[in-house]
Length: 73
Image (cartoon, rainbow, N blue to C red; front, side):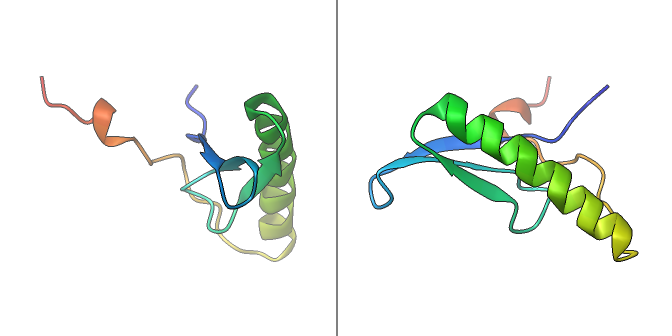
């Protein structure tokens, strides 16, 4: 089963790690470490999906793939 792609990167400006899910608009989180950011974005994903369900809004399927994985064979 596929799941949403999560980007994790260090932000000099914020002084920590940012994790985001490109398929879920504005779904991101902050952490002092990559692991902390990942845990937080997993919570944010759950909240995002629950809010969409309660609001009757569509939940997009996982589609985002980084360019590195889009190489043709």
